[in-house]
Picture 1 (cartoon, rainbow, N blue to C red):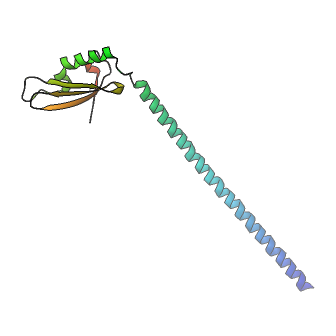
Picture 2 (spheres, helix red, strand yellow):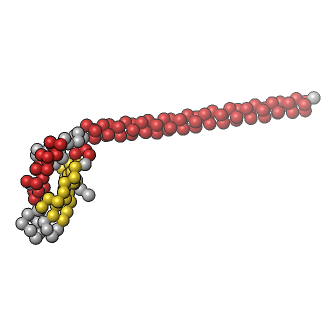
Picture 3 (cartoon, one colour):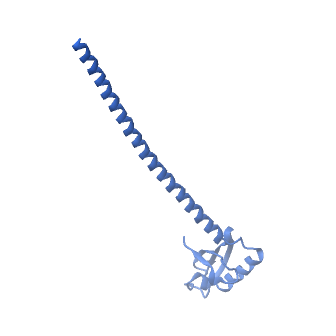
Length: 143
């Protein structure tokens, strides 16, 4: 009889130990899950902040954009370019007395490309027209 009780008590003790080990394992895994969720929330929060910063930057760019030039403004810009071509190009022609305007192409968002030559050398220059009446305020775009 004593053997039967000891077998029963040892199997109960073993079951109790296994239950405690399983309980500890579940608590540990839940803790790991909570840590992973916190990391995931941190990454999501960083992603949301990054998206907000991108939207803010895009909004700034949109605010800085000036509407496309009107026909009158284009004519004024063309006159400014013709009158101040050497200053806009930033250097004197090598072979001729002055630069000659080949073509002016107005693009969207107030971008203008100027094609010029001196009879021996040709070039092109892209600019952003900020104020059509003042060529000094225009920004030269690098290629």
